[in-house]
Length: 286
Image (spheres, rainbow, N blue to C red):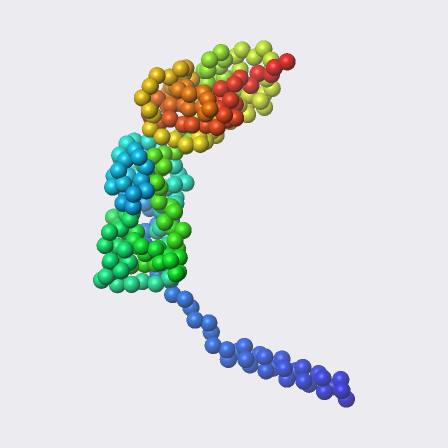
């Protein structure tokens, strides 16, 4: 008798729970507001400028930085010319996919610190002006498309310090394939699909030679900047598969290795360990 009573009670509880779930009001959907209908892969031109005094010493805070995509590669076209860092470009383009928690009328810009924006980003023809920070909600006010949007504060950190912060830190552009390196005392040449080291008195193994070449092809500098005037102590000649020649000048060996790519007038600084691997022959030593 007790067993049947327990089963009936359990059945009643299950039915009651089912009815409650069925009749429970659906949770309210939090509305989100898109800042743009433009997709990142459709963008081909960006411009940004900062007015908050945080720009680097190379340019004034108000100097516009223009970045354009040409033949699939993003390049800085003003205030100087250089390859642009793909990661920095993606961070800037992230504003296109950002959604805000609210949308306000743009009728009191001073209230949001947008009467004097701290920064401005223009992607294609759409302008994004950055204003004050709401310290309570940890959101940044952005003016675009005639309205004010509070967006996650982290979005502000995507703004580069200045134009030099946008320079690509890789020595070679996408598609540039080295086939020969000529350094002081030795050369490394691609012959019939294999890398040949000359001289190679120590008998460097094939994987050691390939690793040395990969070190150059994949080298990412600690920082990149416009080259400073001054002579190079030595030069490294690199021949590309296309037949083009690139010269890297060695302007400093310690405490960091600093190379200047002559055709781009950009200098690259490497930590000592990386610098040693780039300049030292992979030949085995007894």
